[in-house]
Image (tube, rainbow over all chains, first blue to last red; front, side, top):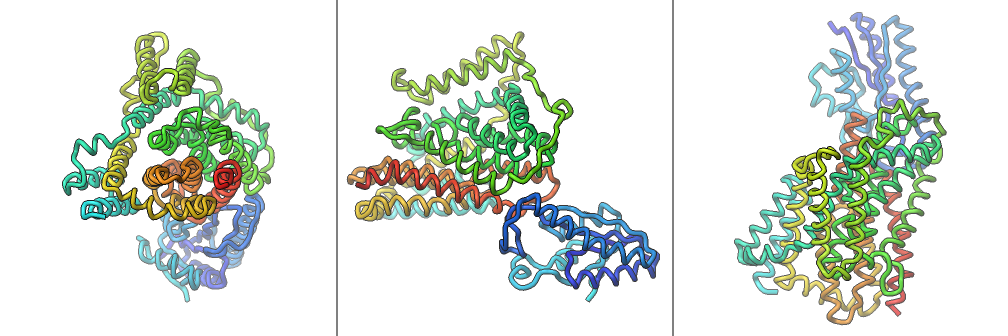
Length: 147
Length: 438
């Protein structure tokens, strides 16, 4: 059935739940997993969605992003190891997660994207749109949205 | 306003909206706007031709030709390598030196050309020092855009000021017993760079770099060619500085410089092996040239139908009531507007407006300077404000193989623009506006 599943994460609880379920699916069908995180660029301004919420030197910001990426992808890696599922982690810099997800899936030869239904809420979702919706609209491979 | 004035205003407004919207190429839109002005009887085709300041177009094209040879001389690459040596491997310092280099060159060379010259060399330097590419290229873009107005040659706004006011080369350095564009923008630039260093570049750690392994030319490959081009460039600039003594138009001096350089290079082709004239001509930004020609005709049509007179009459009481308040409003309303719309049309329109206010006793020079400075500094706010930043952004995205989001761009452009605009405003008010306001 599916041989290579892409599981994007943004560190939210929804994507953590989806990642756990994705690992179970991969185990059941004998697929390998690629954990994926689209890191924001390390600007001096720290954004929460659209709003600037703080300042950090780009060096410190980059380290903070890398720590976050290690934590988010690390969670998927540990789940994959426990389940005995082959795993690799991919991290890219992008402020456009949906596009980055689709590009990573195509580059990695994935045949399924397994993701949470939303990460942005409120104004951000209104103005920017759901990343999941964008992936669903533009994907050329199956997308499974885990609620 | 009579019917013809309303028609002219409508055509102008529609043209600008389409230029800003960027659905159709702006040059085509502008040319169609001129054609519409003619077909609707606002002006004749002879009027349209006469409204273009061909002196400014000659300056633009001539300097671009010389800059085209300069870009191929290897000098920008050599200068960038010297910048790396000077930085001692400090990434933040390298960015500042490259920004200064971009700013200095852009006082004489078009902003887009500066970015296209410097980015290919800046990119390997940035990688060697583990610097993220986007802020480095954007800083070069901001600096090139910023300092283009310091002297007469670097950008269209100062050349438009020359066209409308008769400002000479020396007026951009010292005028009426006070420092003008060059010294004021230099001070503003220095403070802005210091602020940007503190904001985004001071924390990068020093790196050891093998310059030889960078893959960029560390020596000027064709020294005689480079020497001739740089020397002729400087000679042309000196000629333009002494325009009044020579008694001819600036455009003619620039054209003489360009044409004589081309002639010399062709005559010495065997010895110097320069790029061909066809290659240089082919690399000129003909879209921009046609756009600027159309712009002069479009704004000229507003002048012809006295729309600009009406705007001047409407604004005059504000400046007569409080010159300082008027200058402040002019400055701070200009900054955000030129940040989101192409700034040349706006600046040219208001240069004429200020000129018309002069007839009623409003001192034009402080307002002209404040307009040109705010119009240039504000255009760094977004990509829409300046074509140079569009070129810079394309380079960033191509190099990083990802799109640069608006929030990422604004995280660099807003601090740069706000600091520059604030410093320049304070200096401009102290040196130019308040003394006249009294």
